[in-house]
Length: 81
Image (cartoon, rainbow, N blue to C red):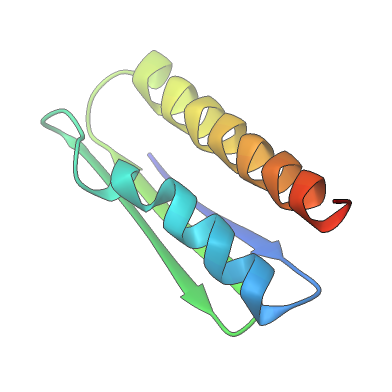
């Protein structure tokens, strides 16, 4: 199973902050799972490959999107203060 997730942001700084916030996920993954997140201009691109269970694949995508949501809320909170 494979997924490519592309998220676009208004500024390079926002995209960079989100990419950095979720990049620790690139390191700690179980065997049979590959996750890579990079920033390209104002986009954050994540590739996920899973050779194990569908549940692992779905949980990985859910974890990624949760981390992105937290990063976006943090950015918004900082911008509003």
